[in-house]
Image (cartoon, rainbow, N blue to C red; front, side):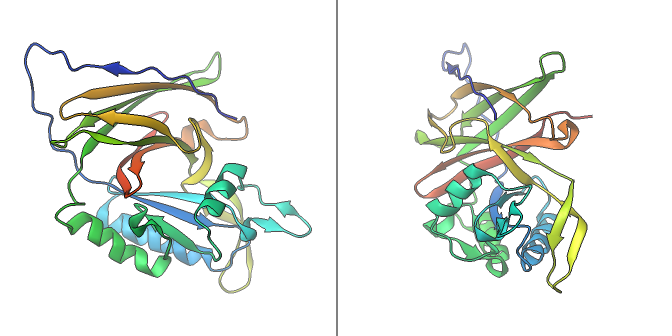
Length: 256
């Protein structure tokens, strides 16, 4: 379980105002998946295709193992299942997998075959293609206490104040575990990427409002489960409101 501590610092008093640089827009894909879902690897392939097309700083995916295909009648929940992920699954009233959200467009899930069109829309639409905030994440890890630390700075880019919820998720890449495949086989050593492990703040995020040129900093402290590989862990941080995700970024806990 992860733990949290928050602190807000406003830096609106400056001797000289400097216009914040324009931030590149990034897109969040929330992939609701499961190890017992035979078609879910097809959604994973679509994510890989989109990342190859646009780059891993533009398309940021989180695989949320949840729902009926993350459970088995005899074996119980799969190794990658989380209760928080199941809360998200229920919140969106999902009934099938694979399915996902692209920037939470239209407030509804999309079939994986529609993700490419939604990503293109977000990047080319005259309104949505402009980042209203920039998110900068700095991380540190104390090997003595085995605690991680994050400083998340949100910078206002829009002419008007931007309000929403700041969400901080911990994800892990390169997890070796089983997966049922489209041909009906069971792959014992499937490479699971961008797997949701925990929300290190409230599962629904922290309230945040930032004005043009303002920097709002929130600091977090968290612990990692001993089973997680530290070197493969990252934070996915995004700001969202009722209209969708405004901006997202991904930062490894340790950069080499």
